[in-house]
Picture 1 (cartoon, rainbow, N blue to C red):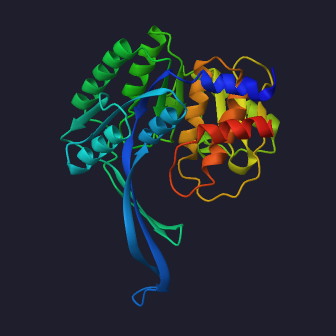
Picture 2 (picture 1 turned 180 degrees about the horizontal axis):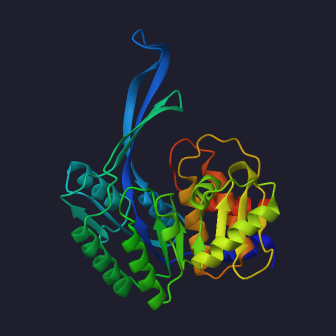
Length: 334
C-alpha cells in the first residue's frame, strides 16, 4: 500500500470516533479593521473598525478540529449564566455541535478574548474572564455530569484542554481520569503551568517547551537530546504517563514512550509562512487524540499532529484544520 492510501485509510478511520473534550471554553471575538494613521493621543495605531465576528474558542476550538477531521466531539465545560454564554451556545448549535455537555453557573462569567486585527495583523488582545477554580458545588455537578456523558456517549478518547481558567481543578482532573481508567478510555492532556503536576496516569501528555520548562522548574535545551530525555523520562515515570509529546515551535515536536530507554525522538518541523500561531496547540492535540484512539505508533502520532499544527499557522486567527489539505501534506512530505 502506498503512503497516500495508507494515510487516506487512517484519516477515514477518524470518521465516527467519539471524543469527549473537557476544559475551558471561551468566545473569540475578532474586531477587523484598517490602520492608516497613528493616534494623536498616544503612539499607538488607530484601527478603523470594518467588521466584527464571534468564534468558538478554547476547548471549543478543539471540538471544531475534531469535527473537521470527521469525528464526533462532545464538549464539556462550565460557562456563565449571561448573554455571552447564550451567544456561545448559539454558536455551538450553528456549527452542528452538541450543547449537552455545557453547564451554566451563576458564579462565573463566560470568558471572552477580544482580538483587534488591523491590516490582517493582530494589534491587541483584551481578555474578560474569571479564572478562579470552580466552586465546590459546581465542581461536584460538573464531575457528575461528565460521568453521565461517559456512560451514555461511550467515547473512544478523552481530551483535557487546560487554559488555566478554573474548570480543570486538581479534583476534576483526578476524578475524571479515574473514570476513564475504569472505562478503559485513553486520555490526552494539553496542560498549563498551574495544574501541570496534577495530570497523573494520562495516556498522552502534550505541553509545549515553555510549559515543560515551567512545569519541571528547569531550563531545557532542544539541542541537548540526552538532557531532554533524562528530564522527560523522570517526569513520565513519576506521573505514570505513557506518551509525552512536547511541541517545540520551529524545532518540531518531541515524542517519548514510557518504559523505553533513550526512546526520545525529535520530529523536525517543515518550513512555512507563519501568519498566526493561535490555536495550533488545539489542532495538535485533536489530531494526536484521534491517532491515539486508533492505536497508531508514537512516531506516527507525532508526525501527523506536527504537520497539522503547522498547517493552521498559515492562516490568520484561530481556525480548525482542513482534513483534505492535511492528507495532501502528509502524503507529499512523508
